[in-house]
Image 1: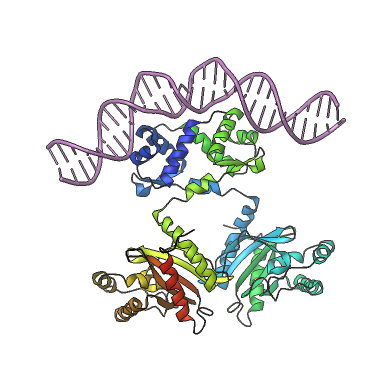
Image 2: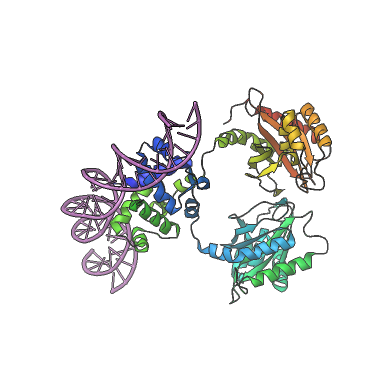
Length: 248
Length: 248
DNA sequence: GGGCATAGGACCACGATGCGGAACAGTACA
DNA sequence: TGTACTGTTCCGCATCGTGGTCCTATGCCC
């Protein structure tokens, strides 16, 4: 099938811009095309937002359109976008990182994470997937599983992520019962050394769990002695607000 | 100036792919063009790497070319690439984050940072610019300034980033003399609360400072009591090796 | 297994669009 | 002021992109 020359030329020009070419003549030299051809292409690419002029001058650089194309719209991004302002507010209130995860089979995938205002903080886990039992969000989601799903999960040996990770089925069942009563879950140094976290479920108006919101921080400062209950309350309240208040 | 229709169409197709369209017919519907036009465009975009087929089938997704265009080649990236394996080895050896910064006027710009193997670590500062006096890499670079440059910098009030930041010119001059003797610099909680760091210069074969390599970590565990000297030696040695050993 | 519906892809006549040379305006520098 | 260079615009021309058509492949249903 014959290709479209104009599109090939446009990408050659984008290559040159990306590689540091500056003005029309420079780019024309690099791609071996007449200046008028390059000027017309640049004008079109600029209209499209694929390139932009540096400080309104006559030097070109890659524009915002290409990064936008690289971030494909994903159904879960919509949910992330709704949750995001709540996570940001919670991060400011607690001074720690916050995040949101959804079920991925019998694991949990971190959809989005908001950085702590502190320089020392937990690293970014966005996009990563973990077994449900090792972190607070996963435990919250497990509390919603049917008896059959739970039995199946607990019927095989569980992975310990630290020496503190709870892996005994009996203990896990007791923990889940407690989570169902409390509406939140604290996990200390089970997911990773030096990290504590608390999570609560985000539910839709029908009461189904969409995912779990969590806050986590270095154990040496989070939680402060005696603060566990109000922190858990705050996370639980924030989770409840996700689909109750308009996001803007 | 008239635009190039084919390029506009190509981007409309990229938009549709990015938005989740799957096959030729789907995309043709979304962009309101004949299938043959869309098929030809997709074939060209596929040749260019801008789109690719999902699992070799007939569904399309955004290809690797666009992210490549978004990362412009920068002269400093070459230097980063050379430094990177050294930073990675140092991060493994120390168990803390490492990084490399270069002079940017009288400030320091962090070119690259390598994560610590620890879950609790210093956040990523890559790309950020700081006044020279507030961090170990900047102080190392200041030690290379001429008397005139130093006088000019110290003639205006300096910004304190924490209550520990050294901002008195006399103290700074003494510190710089010490750094010239030692070949490294330790900074504790001056750049940010809870962070300590040590840096040493990376020099070219002519002895000129290209930038400064550093390691930093949460003060509660870095450095361990009594380890400051061997850590500083390790950073200084690693910095010396950057342009001495082949990078691979 | 056969029929049907749909999608993908190749082909080709045609004219619209893109090409590129030339000229001009603007800017920087000696 | 003159020169050199860059960016922009115009326009005649023909090449390239268009889009309708048709064929093949695939999946689904009976």
